[in-house]
Image (tube, rainbow, N blue to C red):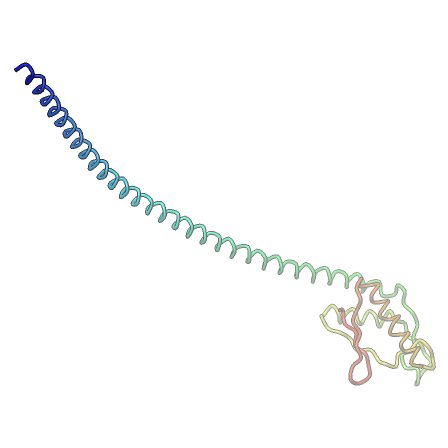
Length: 193
């Protein structure tokens, strides 16, 4: 019997070991199920939180986009106001320049022949320049005769010389090159610019 006892003890020990291992495996299985359930719950919670974060970011982006659009509209409005102010300032500067020029038309004035074929009398360019500047102040141009000449005989070179001197006198007074064009009737028109 003594040989059977150690064998029974071993069998019992092996059975106890198997029971402990089975209990351990069941505990591991329960722990794994619990871990899987916890992971599923954690995943659902993470998905829910991620969706809220995504919605919050989208909402922030939409708010940001709306704020950028509003800012762009304000910038465009300011830009338009600056352009309008610049235009007003340019017009005011133009008018002040023309007013100053109007008081100085006798500076660098010269004598010319207004109607060389009919008269040998000369005229002073200061009066003609004054008249042109007054038209410029009203945003119009002025017509000048193609007959105006620097010499009594009124040849083409002398007429061209008159137009160049007249244009130069105005340029010095208004601080910019006036524009002169020949009209269909042969006369010339001079404009502020």
